[in-house]
Length: 218
Image (cartoon, rainbow, N blue to C red):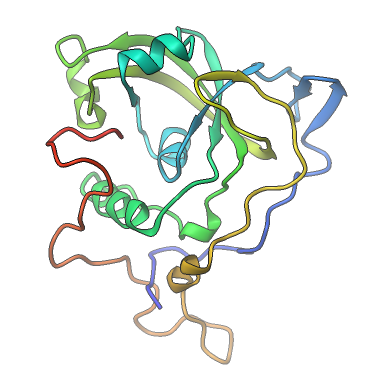
């Protein structure tokens, strides 16, 4: 088993909270304060969707073609956690985020196939125009500059490319088999083993899951 710094709860398939999500009419979903959620969403692969809402990730990197064809502009949108996530993507993200003191949850705790929060897209930048404080997240060639992330009780939804009109679905993507290796090991008395609540340690940086250039997509 591979230990983490924080214990997590149920690692099974997540279901919507019955009180915090209300379907008032087709295509209109509200949060627990009865405020309509943004109708448009952007699907982002985990664990980067989590990093946008919870980990301080302020740039979502895209190509100019993806921005244009996806009708991306400045507005408040929902962040949709895509269903795909490979183990090497997760391991590289753990290492990357550790370098800025951000600890990822175990992979089975990361919602996949659902709306997890909202964020304001305030600008579309290139490296030259990207504010210095946001450059650790910039991989280019273009980036959506993000502010004001707000987590939501997750809502199952099917993702699409670009900005898309989302609708509540039935269930989230269940955890993949490889994710069980990252669950903290419990002793017979229900407590963690002595060394099983430690973060992942890397002797060398893990291999990047995408590309070979110095610029990454996330």
